[in-house]
Amino acid sequence: MTSTLAMPQPETPVEQSKPKRLLTLAEFRRKYSDREDRYKYEFNNGIVEKSSSSMNPKQLFIVKNLNRRFIQTQAFADGGELIPEVEQMTSAAQLRRPDISYWTANKIKNANESISEFAIEIISPTDNYIKVGEKRREYFRAGMKVLWQIIPEEQSVYVYTSPTQVTICEGSKVCPAAPVIPDFEIAAEDIFSK
Image 1 (cartoon, rainbow, N blue to C red):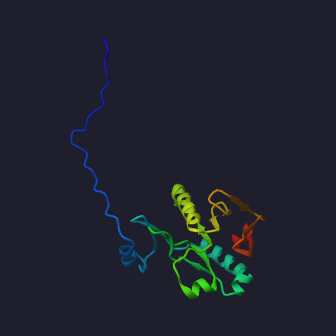
Image 2: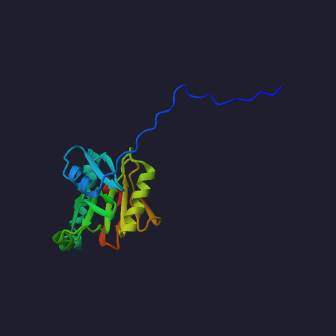
């Protein structure tokens, strides 16, 4: 005698969740651009992506160390700045706010919605690995030339010059921002020093 196992059927039908209504970029800007709470909001094809934006003490040390080195560059002497969380359109349907990005004096003066050529993301343990990779590819499609992904827990910096070309910097290995800022270099250990 042969028996067949059947999958148990639910007693009640499973409810279908309603798809979320997608926002337009104008709606996103109206509702989220000036919001001042402890979150960072980005726009990705009609969906609002929310992440924690409050800096912890480790991240503040990182930003301080980066700025102290940056003010020694020609880019700074020429009026360039490293600025946190500037809105950047990476496509017609995607708006991002890198943790830190480089802006020339001319781009600051003209305040256009272009993407910076150099940005820094500080990766936290709660960041989704897949989303981090998707955002990296998105930045380069939009015209970014150098992206640093800093991972404080590893004390490492991933320096990307394309979506797949990466140099991993740890310890005394120097992290370069060339070709965007040729004289902005800093040893990984100096990024994390207190």
